[in-house]
Length: 360
Image (cartoon, rainbow, N blue to C red; front, side, top):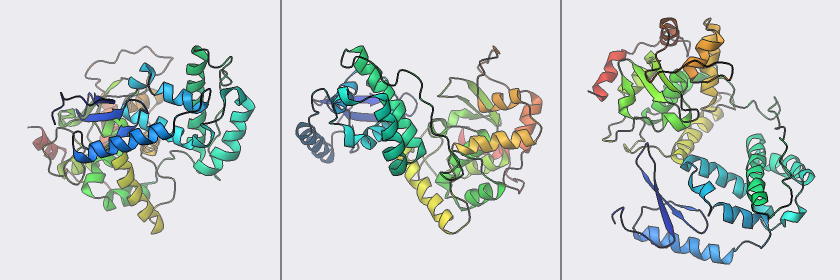
């Protein structure tokens, strides 16, 4: 079925970077997983529609707010990855979907977070659910469904501790080495981009082959829109040189040569991480975002100042007004710092020039 064909009750969205199409059930906001137009697609659509009719939200409830929010322009402008995160929060909040808005106050939300969500889902999702609730309450208040937003005032987040696990902690040299050595080629490349260029998942899963040029990876960061150009570290050069065969213009691809989805990468990386944890090769708590902290830590140890680290990681300080050019060229000393970092305790030996064959 061509992309021009319309299906009643389905909205289609094309990702501006990956050019992949996504299909959503309009009434519920649920993303359909099957390929558009296939028999599996229409079967999945029918099941979603049946479930939506059966589980119609209770009037005046939190579930109704969620349903209306997912029908609104506020939802349609969100990136696919952000919608997936919101859906995680919606699912975690499922036990209170039928709760009337009038019964939800600030003290209830704190009790829900600390006594239920934290124990069942961990620190990150417990905090994230409160963030999503504040957005839903603002949405409801603006439409007159709630008199006051109980989360209008900022909520202090639960902090990570040694007991509940340090969030996004830096990786040790031994952990970096073990993961890079053991990771299959299709997982190694995205991890190397996070480790050696400090890219966030939203960036390392979507950048194209054109981003690799003249010995650097150049990208405009998705979170802050800051253009950065990071010299290719030997570890990253080796990972790029051994990229799985693919016709895709996206740099990071799975084992079959197709661009990663966020959920697919998370599942594959999670499986590898759990295996290495069970073998005692790495400690618990490794995250891809922790590799940004790793790079920042190594740069600090190498003598980089705050401004240099911020330039390399694509951070924009509120105290600075420096203009970032399209090329976002780093100072020579920063380039040397990145290229010379010993991230794994073993110096890289790959030739950066090998990666040019991908874009020639």
